[in-house]
Length: 155
Image (cartoon, rainbow, N blue to C red; front, top):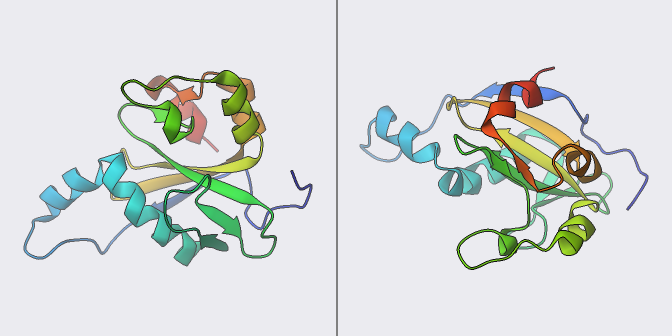
């Protein structure tokens, strides 16, 4: 992993309010409900992040979601913190019939900076960039529980 300093301040919570969202004639209430689903939200927020932070989006399902505009060797992965907490293990290790492989999890996680985004209070969102090594130290199973939401995003 590069020792280059990332272009984004790490371990700081950034607060944003998304003011313009919608889809045709769907009400704001319905759009909020849909965008609180992390699977849907991620597609929008990944593109939005690149408009608001010095990152380049890597399209498709790669091993990471962004590279740093100033230091392309620095890799970032976006994970959404929802009402279920935040699972930052690789997608290939999550879901029915998939197994958590601690060795592979650690190998992948230490190479990344995670962009943890909370959409719990959408349209207000919180973003925190954290090195994978720091996440593993505190959450070795790859999961940040919902009960830690407040303490994780406190400044």
